[in-house]
Length: 93
Image (cartoon, rainbow, N blue to C red):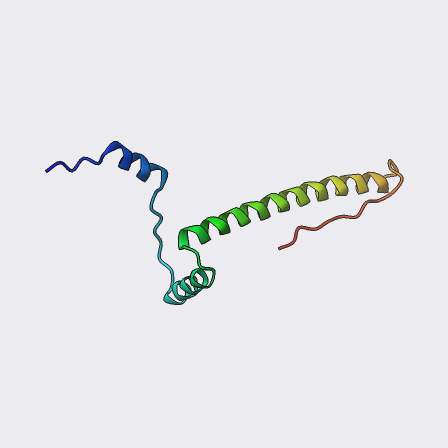
């Protein structure tokens, strides 16, 4: 019997790898409740969480960059090189 997978199956498995990890019984129960309440699959829910985290990271990076620029600008104001201070935004945790 041939154990070789067809090329289409190999491509599918390469593009859709299995992710496995252990979590507590309590976390698994909560996960199952969440996906049931949202009427979604674990895969769809996890992909949404990943997209949301990526979005939040980008927002934090933009805020940090803006905050760095403002701190530099405000330091220049204090040194007498600029006329007015700008508000400094902190990164939310």
